Length: 230
Length: 232
Image 1 (spheres, rainbow over the protein chains, first blue to last red):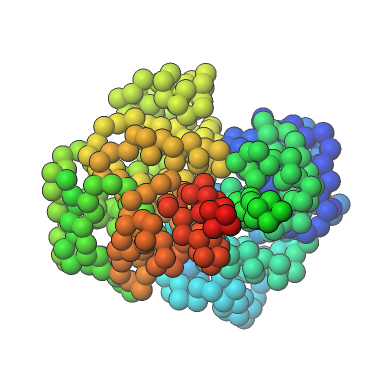
Image 2 (image 1 turned 30 degrees about the horizontal axis):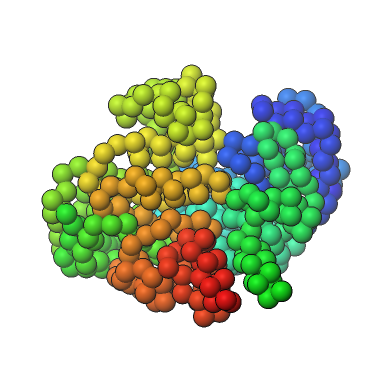
């Protein structure tokens, strides 16, 4: 469980929030605090007041695989191989373990062709994918993705969504502006002006957003068809 | 007014893109997979990347600009009002357009990324140009602002507007579709007929076509209407 109590940080104010294990999507308008909340879950920021625990530990004592919203900021090494190996080296894994983990991570994202590429030559979407490969190579217990799909084409974004459940991590936390993607999560956190307006499974949350642009497109079409059939 | 690509080749180490065709007046949507070369082609069309061979000819186009994928690449003003003034625009009006009323004195990079994108798109769409090249204009915008941007593009677009995107949820009405695949730019033709040969279409369009409906255009509303029409 991720438990937030009396959380305050910048514009974010969350009194109580308990997120069960599984895939949770964070949605909401621009500026509502999605990236801020994810950076707190990742331990990149620490709250001004209040507390966050992930399965009883502080975020900074948890292995987190993080893909930030700025693709340029995710990559700091010259080559793709060094980038993916970086998290493993920081955790002092022996050299003999690096190669298979790099190969596995690139295979997971279906981009083994990028193995010898230089990071600065990658497109925006490829940078996001390599950041994901670096995040999963460590086999973290928590994966946090901040709008990774905004950098990806449909086929690639769908591939990422397909492979996410195969990682043996306790929590996948993901912000997205694609409500059809959010509809596939176990739970949603809908943020508005720094507070949690809704929390729960998609089938409970989206009906409250039916008359807004935050309602999933494919659900809208299903609704159209069923009303016509009646 | 048109933009002509004559046997253009863009290349680097293990990658190349071939582009041949003419962008005539209207709104063109260009899609492609990650790393297919959308941003490289956008840069080349804006004159910021030299093709390895071939030529790009701007006919009757005197004023043009490129909006890059990441709004932070454009941001030069420390404060929001300075950023807006750097475009020669009036801060209060643009802040109103971008839903950032009263935030003129905030630091540009203190805005969320979506807010920065809104600010940038409001600045770029306030200008008068013959050719506007938009690289991923919808990226990081929330669904409501994506819809607003679509309406803005439809009502205020320059004579020749090129939109490079992999957006899957909210798209504007367009005149022509193009797709980059297998290293080449393909002209799919005029909408709606072009929709049928669009391999990277969003799921909602693919689903409508699968059910036998051909939308008049590529927006959610057009697609929904086509589905409803089919059921009638």
